[in-house]
Image (cartoon, rainbow, N blue to C red; front, side, top):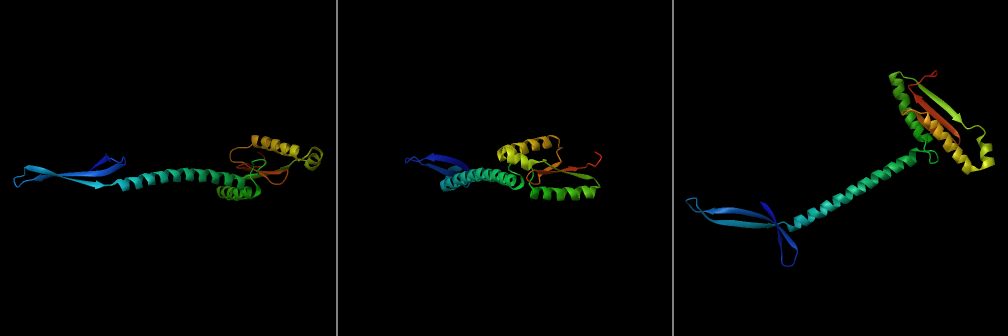
Length: 169
C-alpha cells in the first residue's frame, strides 16, 4: 500500500500503489515475493483538478460574500450619508420595538430636520447642501450609542431611535 511516483521515459510521472506479499513454501519459509502495482495516475490527476476547483470555489465564495455585503449596504443605507434608509430603519425598528416591549423597556424617538434647508440649497447649490447633510450626520452619529438607530427619513429629515431610554433621559 505504498504510493510511489515513477518517472517514465516520456517524462510524465506515473503514480502507482505498490503492494508486496511474501511467497511462502509449505514449511513457511520465504521463497519469493509477489509485487503488484496499481496505476492511480488518473486518480491523482482528477484529485489535483478537484483541489484546484475547490480552491477556485473558495475564492469565488469569498468574492460572492463580499459582494453580498456590498449589496446589503446598498440596500439598507442611504448612499449620501451612510445612515439607514427608511426601509431598513422600519425593519430594524420593528424588531427593536418588539424586543423592548417584551422586556418592558422604554424606547424614545427623536425626529429632526435641518431648518430652512431648501432656501440654503437654492442659494448655495446641492453640492454644498450635500456637504451640510453629511456634516449634520457626522454630528448626530457622534452622540449615538452602539444600539441607537439613525435614519435619513427624508431629504433633510432624520429619525433617531434610542432604545432603553426614557423621555427624561
